[in-house]
Length: 169
Image (cartoon, rainbow, N blue to C red; front, side, top):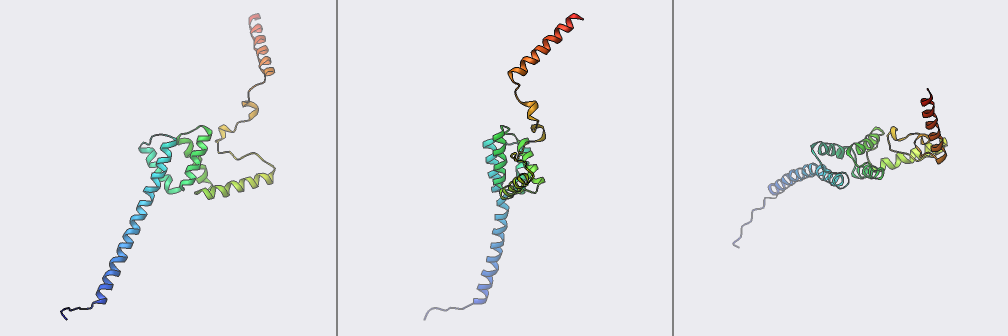
């Protein structure tokens, strides 16, 4: 026999175990660091596709938002802004602020919140759909609706009468 083998099982296993565990921990830390970047990348892409270019302020805001809410909730905020025709950072930020004020941080939280609001409104007899608009947009329809032809004619008569009275003075 020309071979000589010297078994060193303890040294080899200790070395592999120690080295492997440290490497696994380093890999986990690296993955944790990469997660927000990946998440921010998704937020960034969605923002650019629906709202516009990203400057330094928007980039910082997107990073903060990506740590506070999930992607699906951000996507829903963009959808609401798009449906309202108000595709800008301020409007989306307002929607998200309302959600954060109500401790809504995920799409599932939002669904649960909306079900709760719907149930409370049905119990109270109020059946209007929940709106995310700010208070300025929740104006009384009586004052913001288009006037009827009769109302327009009545206003014209009033204006004509005021003009005649002014000419008589």
